[in-house]
Image 1: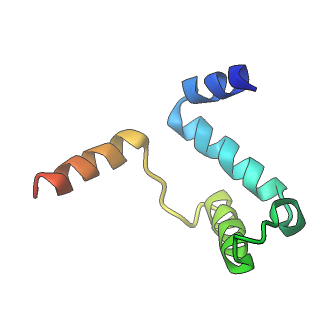
Image 2 (image 1 turned 90 degrees about the horizontal axis):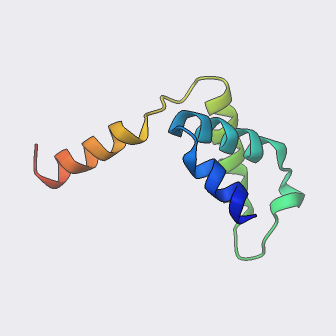
Length: 76
């Protein structure tokens, strides 16, 4: 499992996002049911994954996100 994790972390951010979206979309609510996680959050995660797959959600690269965080931090 550790080797798989390292391989995934070595992938470009866009590919990791596609993989995460694919994995989330493959899960049913029964697969991820956890009493401590309200069902509404599980549903929201699935809906968001579907919106990403359809291209309805603007996606940003990790580099863009880091730049935005840095700009906010420095008041730019």
